[in-house]
Amino acid sequence: MTDAPAGAGEARARALYDLGPTAIFASKADPRFHYALYVPPQVGQGAKVELLVAVHGTSRTSFLEFRDGFSEFGRWNDCAVLCPVFPVGVRGDGARSGYKYMQEGDIRYDEVLISMVEEVAEKYGQNWSRFAIFGFSGGGHFAHRFAILHPRKLWAACIGAPGSITRLDPTRDWWVGIRDIKARFGVEFDGEALAQIPVQMVVGDADLETWEITHKPGGTYWMEGANDAGATRPERLQALAQSFRDAGVDVQLDLVPGVSHDRLKVLGRVKDFLARTLARMRN
Image (cartoon, rainbow, N blue to C red; front, side, top):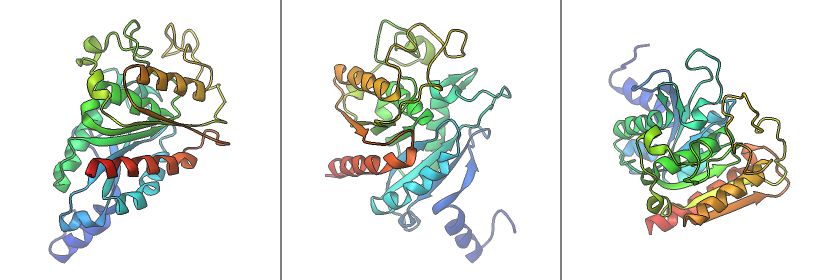
């Protein structure tokens, strides 16, 4: 089988690998990183759709769960789904958490994602200069920090159960605060743009384990203030919501009853939020 089948074979390959639940692709800008998509079949007939980026947690396995979990939503709401893969140990050191904090050595994970979005927008002939972002657990780290750095790239942000948060605190450095983001990332904090984004924060009210989220001196991401936002994920997410609200952001905070750290049990809440946001945006 060739990589470029001709005629009817080319159309069949596109239907199999590029539409619906797609193959897994390497990023052209940096092939160390990968992505899969759900592309509504109407895109094959030239339809214009919106884009949702759904970011995995530490295990990385949820990227396909999110691709498939949002596929029906995407089909009936005219929305493609892009699920990036940021592998463990991409620098050969076994590190698991670099993507959560946006920078790891010379890697800027926000820029990796932006390049992926630009790549797929060109491939499918779409205008995805703005997109929605969702992430759970480690992906929740990524989603809210991406929103802080690039609010003008987003039409919505859904932040699920991050273990640690970056509050909009101009008196503390990244990652606890935002004082040094100009020096670190080359961007100014744009509170006005952030306040224009519909934001949902979602966590189970039984998501109470702390073994993975308590920072200790000597840890890779230890810094003063690392645990100040609370002990548990619900406490920390409520602190993040308050920080965003203090900056003028309209935040919908969903504490899901009886749910622990279970990504699939919050997807319904996220889909409802995104569907309402899309309806308002299109009207």
